[in-house]
Length: 107
Image 1 (cartoon, rainbow, N blue to C red):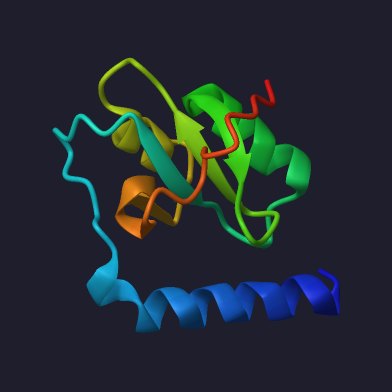
Image 2 (image 1 turned 90 degrees about the horizontal axis):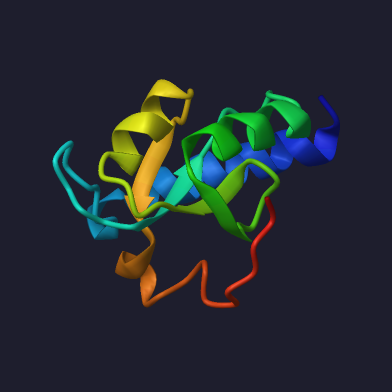
């Protein structure tokens, strides 16, 4: 793993650890349609995108290559993301509408 990726991973983990009190974690039965998903930073980009695409529609990118925003009309997006290997799943709307705001579609 490149130094840049390692630093990004450490920064993301630190930010998530410090900001855990403001994150709205969706429960297993939640009906949230758009979620931020953090995948393991040591996974390849191809592996991350494959896992994300199998979970829902990729609608935006996060601040690091292992953070994506997913959307699905089908219930259980958070459960599918965790089963696909996500470290952290959070409600994208809990950050003032961050992610998916651009309306881009990647798959």
